[in-house]
Image (cartoon, rainbow, N blue to C red; front, side):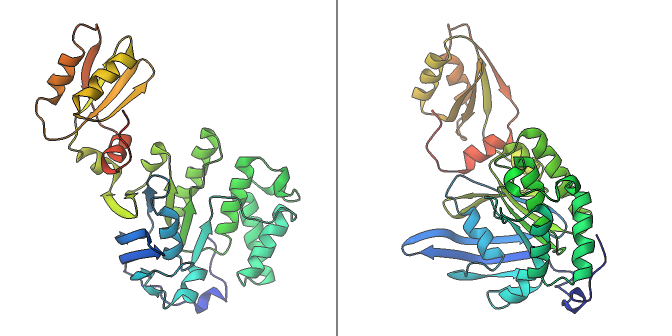
Amino acid sequence: MDTATAADSARPDNGAGEPAIVATGLTRRFGRTVAVDSVDLTIPRAKIYGFLGPNGCGKSTTFRMLCGLLTPTEGEVRVLGHSIPRDAETVRPLIGYMTQQFSLYRDLSVRENLDFLGKVRGLSRRRRRERIEASLETYDLGRLARRRPENLSGGERQRLALAAAVLHEPPVLLLDEPTSAVDPRTRRSFWDSLFALIEHDVTILVSTHYMEEAERCHQLAILDRGRLVAEGEPKTLIGDLGHTVLEVEGEQLARLRQRIAELGIARSVAQLGNRLRVLLEPGDPDAAGLVGAAIAGSGASIAETRPGLEDVFVASTQGDRDL
């Protein structure tokens, strides 16, 4: 990234040597509702750390507490060596935040949006000009500089939102479901941009509903009903899954699915085209044999297969069984 401005030179050491973010006992209540419940996190620097979980699991509330926009009911957060909520005003300039919904000014052009945000962030006129030109080039927005957001495609608005979030070169970037409204090709290009930021020592936190995105993260936290239920590298989470996964291929899958569900030994039975993917509950060494017996005579084939991250997600969360 570009060198720091004179204003940036006044920034503190930012806890060099510490993890980017450490949360201890992080809790947030809204009345009697516990949105986030005693979450502990240690997020390393210059990595992409993902949050995965069902709707309403506490991802967005956690994000708002990590960046100082929401005060925890209990617990403490340290961001780059600074304590939240005590040092919230110091921490906020060190964070870029891209919300799930597009939140820039629709009556300003691309360039005007970036210029306005540069002023809000305290960048000098010269520095704003440098950063805007660099951002227009980096995020392929140069030919769109005079357009208003309402005249941009979903992918173009996404690139503009990312350019705005990193305009002041924050060392920490929070992205709340940033690719929920774009196609797979645009999503892949967006992630290429994130890995480019990692090369410049930016720490990125991203929440997502997409399993293929979650697998791109260096580390992953799975939240459910406000609690941290699994954490680690995606491949480690998959490798440590203590569930057997079967694939059943054949005809009359609805009938086969019902037979398997009636056994009471499956955490999930999901239809994928012309096959069923069966996630068995752990602890029963004969479970696969029971499934085989249940579908005997149907002409269907059955085989054990490698678990995936979606299986980890289903096994970790407490939603209704997918039966």
